[in-house]
Amino acid sequence: MSAAALALLLAACGGRPPPTAPPPLDEELGEEADGDGLRIAGIALPRLPLEVSATEPPLADGWARAEAALTMPTPRPPEGEAWEVEGWADGELGDWMRRRAEVVGAAQRALEPAREGRPEHSVVASLLLGLAYSRFALDLRGIETPLAFSNDPERAQAFRAAMEQAARPLWLRALDAFGSCAAVAAEAPAHSLARWRERCDAELRAVEPMLPE
Image (cartoon, rainbow, N blue to C red):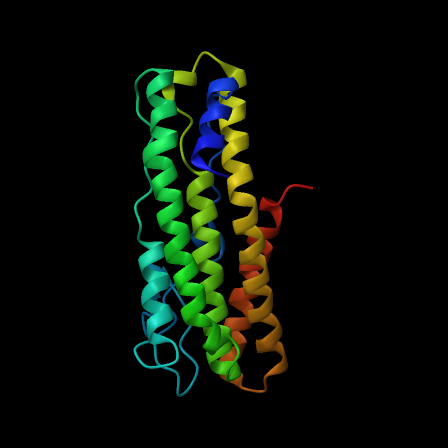
């Protein structure tokens, strides 16, 4: 969704029932260090498969770009009047959405060779890509409803709907990436991929409820 379209939605309706709290995916997935403390942007990962390195091709560039996307701070709405919120949506929020989409897109391009390569590289690259998309969607979903809409349920509802609409294509891409990870890991004989399959399956189960019927 463009920033201009979001601003129009805010102007037309939108509000503040308490925002839907984003699901604590990391806790629900039981993300704990898997022996070697491997993490990306603070997110614990399974131990890397044998002969796979996060700092060497074909993963290094995509890993760095995925980490850059995952560490982008999420903007907070202003506490002022509705017109200030509309300006924020068309400015800071829209800029953040564009910049983060560009970084995630760059991560996907960098990870594609690994996703199409050896199973050991493919599952890692697909999980990283899924995380980049799902956490982008999660951050969008977690943006608080502006205080300016606290007495206007219609505006609050429209704001939440706009966030959900903007997040939906991101959830779908995350679903595709996690599904690819799980499928490749399931077909590969390497025992070191079992934990990656479990993790991608868990991420799939966490993403599926985020999609509307």
